[in-house]
Amino acid sequence: MRRSFGNSLKQKGIHSEIRSDIMGHSGATPTEEIYCDAIALADMLPSIMKIPIVTAHLQPHPIRLLPWVQDKLRPPFSRKRRGTDGAGPGRRRARKTKGAPDRS
Image (tube, rainbow, N blue to C red; front, side, top):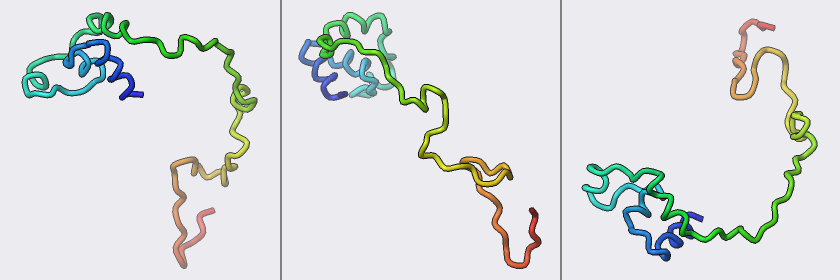
């Protein structure tokens, strides 16, 4: 998509510095990169408006969510939480070492 977008800008005759600013690239020369700020978004708009809308022929459709997403439930394929010791996602339980007393 980025390549297609950049190519569309180039084919419409948009200057390379403006293309770089629109696509978020750093400058090609130290002067462009260090001493110049990106152009304002309002100044980019005329260049962006030259790009054809390739999805203009598509008809809008309503979004259909999966039932469990719509009802804000957990995914049916998710694992149940183990225990109630506070070890949730991303947290590890302390390992038991041999001979250590059981803390439960």
